[in-house]
Image (cartoon, rainbow, N blue to C red):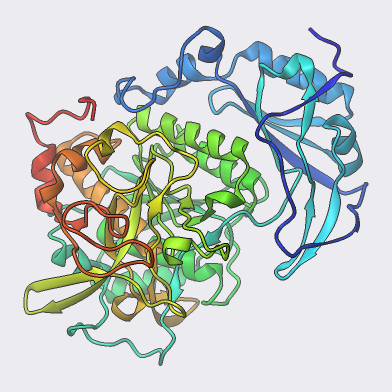
Length: 522
């Protein structure tokens, strides 16, 4: 092995301060922190590749996947030796997840990775940050894919919008609001309750109150107790803030939407810190969870692609590739700030992780109902009340095979599908003891997750990576042809506002039956 004293920049790890942030001095050298290392898969060394878009059977078990695409135990051993030499403690080493978690002081981490850790102040508070790349020993270049957590800036935001009006729930009239069960009926979800399924939900803050959940589900006439459990990842935990406008709104919305649609499914909420390290740790924990075995994962947090390091974009995407290979569907909110994704540089941006080619990206509509007929337009209430995200990735510039027939810009198009998201036609929920109406693409991810739990139950197998089936059968969605999200307009067929459209659940179920096979390439 090469001399470990020699350091080389880790490609893709470069960081810059948050725009407008001010350097206010050294980070506390004695603060104890945890850092997550992502390790390369052993298959990479052996000339293999990760299972991109159907290269591997989607029937792989978690054990089979990890044996083939996990980390090399020798690489983990080298990292453990490196940690010991630099006064760092190994908290966790998981070859299957390709994760090593280290603990130590800021001073020791700064020396180990040849970075200067500073304290920054910005509009949202303070964070510990760095500039430039992380440096790793030359002998670990073929082992370490990414280093996360030296910088603890907030990485993502929840994509929900609380309806700003009287707290009284409005009735379901044209332009009114809906319960999740009403939306399931309007979108023709197949009859099922999610029995035998597990829905994983990723949360980066906030929490839920069991009493609120019980009261909410009872109000919908759901006679059984919905099974909800929390898994703390790293320092994450179920910790309600008591503020419906804060992250509790996201957590309760996600659970209540998914739980109402699939009340017999078990719901596992993975709580982690809102950092790139926490987010990645939560995703890999959920994807590789052999205890709960989620068949579908819902993510309602994200941020513009430009706010992520290249190493994060690559490592998160490889985690979603693993999910696809193991038959786990990942539904991700496409963002609530229109075609700019809230970036004020005059350019169009898409939200990540929705822009990963290995997830089902969920955009938003405005829904109205007249009798049994529904009508949808693109959700756009800018400048003040949000709009669905959508556009073309500037990072995933090779268009996925399943999108080969779409038109528009180059690269991965976002979103894939859509659903009701406008707060004016939003979801009736209960948060921190208060009745509220919430919208945003955050609601669409658990809506689709609940549908997929029903589909899995009825099929007797997991639908897995659903995108190729949907793009081959676009008529299973309600095409939305009116409205825009800023730079992009709705059109017949796929568009960068609502994708293929909102679900027609029964038609999707029929498309999944034989002779359609989920192993077909796009």
